[in-house]
Length: 182
Ligand SMILES: [Zn+2]
Image 1 (cartoon, helix red, strand yellow):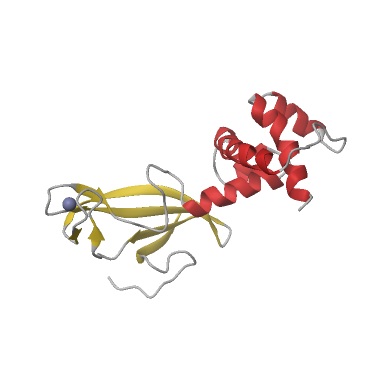
Image 2 (cartoon, helix red, strand yellow; image 1 turned 120 degrees about the vertical axis):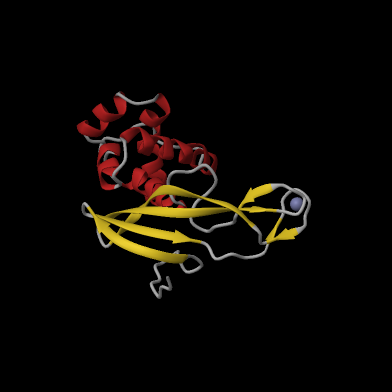
């Protein structure tokens, strides 16, 4: 099936089908077959080994939760080794698209509570906290002196943070202050 649909970030992909199911936007896509370098022997191949459909969460499109069905291809080289194709949408072993991860990190910092972010992105609070925790070491590295507490922190935020990991509890307000000063 040929398609003329293009979506931001999907320019290099082949969108096979889009649909709306239970209020969610669903995109089925795959990558075009291209010559790949074998990571094992350095040779080149475009011989397809197999496909596997992976389901991924993506950022909202037109205010709808968006799910991707990626028909992921593996190539086989003349040397006998098999490897996954390159793609611009998702990193290896991830259940969320690169865009989603990027968004979730930003949101985790900007929104008042992790719960709010989780609801926005249709995921669990713990997933958002994990994304958030990933930013902390980078951010702390960039700036040395960070206020430990802030009077503007809401009671709700305090209670929420109390119940989570210590790094998250300390981190959120700190990170917010770093980002706000930019
Ligand atoms: Zn090879």
